[in-house]
Structure formats: C-alpha cells, structure tokens
Image 1 (cartoon, one colour):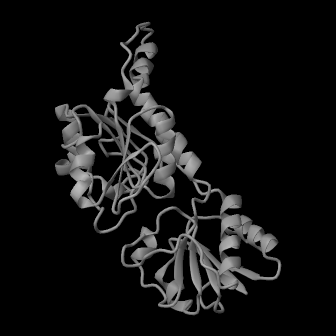
Image 2 (cartoon, rainbow, N blue to C red):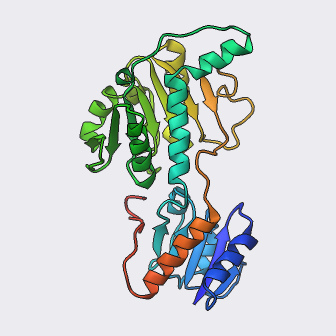
Image 3 (cartoon, rainbow, N blue to C red):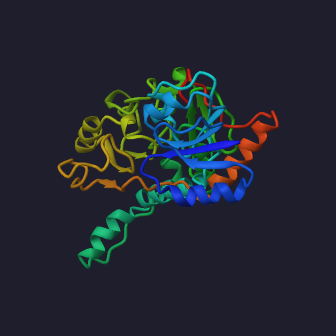
Length: 306
C-alpha cells in the first residue's frame, strides 16, 4: 500500500513520521511531480497537477474541516473524497464560539475598555432568554458547538440544509425555514460548508432578519459573509458587532476596516486547528476500514460539495 502526502503550507516530516509509525507495512512518501502512483492521498489544498498525475487513488483524505479547496479542482473519477470526523477540532471550536458568545453576552468587551481607563463600574445583568443563539450548520463541529452553548443555558437554534435533531436545540431545516431561524436568533454563528448555495449567505437580506442588536460570529469561511453589508448593519445599529475568525482574503489586508472597527473583533483563523496525532489516528482507521471493504464516515458528496 502506498500513501502520498500533499499538504500546502504544512510541514511534512512530522506527518510522514506519524503515518509510517502507524502503518509500518505501508510506503509513505511526500508527493513530488512525476512520482509513482499511490493508493491513498492525504491532502490539504493540493495543486491540480497532483490530482492530474495521481489517477489511481482509491481515496483522498482531507486533513482540514472544509473541502471547498478540493471542490474547485478536477478530481480523479474513482477516488472517494473523505473528510476526517473532526481532526480534533470540535472541542476547540466549541471553546472559541462559547467564549465569543459569553464575551458578548456578559459585555466583557465593554468592561475591558472601561478598566483600561481605570473606570470601576457595573452593568445591569442580562437575561439569557433574551439572547437566543443560532448555529448555521449542524455537522460534526456545529452540533458540538450547539450542545456546548446549550450547557450554558442559552436558547439554541440550529439550521441545516436538511432537517436534523439535536438534543436541546430547536432545529430548522432547508431554505424554507431559514427566515424563521434568523428571526428567532440574536447571536448568529456560521459553521456552514462553503458551497455555491452558501456563498454570501450572510448578506444584508439575511442579516437584517436577525433580532435587533444581533451579533455575528463567523468561524466557517470568509466568503460566507458580505463584509460591506455587515459593516453597514453594525454602523446603523441593527447589529451590535461581530467576532470574525475567517476572511475572504487571508491574512486580512492591513487596510481592511475590520481591523480598526471598535465593534468587530478579529482573530487570525485560529478558532480550530487540525491536531496532527488525532488526525493520523483517524486517517489510519479510515484507510484500514477501506482496505477491509468496509464503509467509512465522512465521504463527501461531490455534487453537494460537502
């Protein structure tokens, strides 16, 4: 069995060492142009040349949460595209989103500003019932985030393309229920896959349906959000602010207004990072199952893009 590794902007040696240790009978190599055909590929944002040359792949295993970079490429016809279950990212994402929600709800950003000015003052406590959180996207990450928010006793709504059931979450399914989901939401969290249908989904038309004083948290992809529409709705007072971890252009250009806006908090795409050891464990398990002829979780529907 031959496994090839082709991950852009990723140090290869630790991955190669880990895969070789876990699969001592396999040949594990870093891809180079003209390399021999492999059975399996471990990838992140590979070039088209890689896919054009590796035509014998049984499966392509993507180490990140999103497969949108792969969906832009021409894929080998017979290869399955497989997402990892969460690559160790679900708990990280729950941590990040919960801190952003709590920071906004408890007005900790306001306290931070006031204490920097040596102002010792209290604010009236808010009621959680007045701050329903809506999670768009109920995959492995979205479901974990929704359940974590529920544990803090926030009202939690969830929206996905198809109807789902999540304990403690009021679920909405399909485009026909999107408006009702948005109107029931004050803090909006985006965890959708990026597809043609979800690109620009957070625009003036949709964001204006959030409850007055709404707040936006985007930890999915920058292309889900129309930047200008968010800025306009924040400046008009309909939205109270945002926490953004992903952007259309990364790194975020220095001249972008998000950097200096007092009501927008930015972080450099760190909400959830792939954990190598957990990822290798999942990769090895999926390859072993495929070799035994068994089904595996995470097979991407190429037509849907996730």
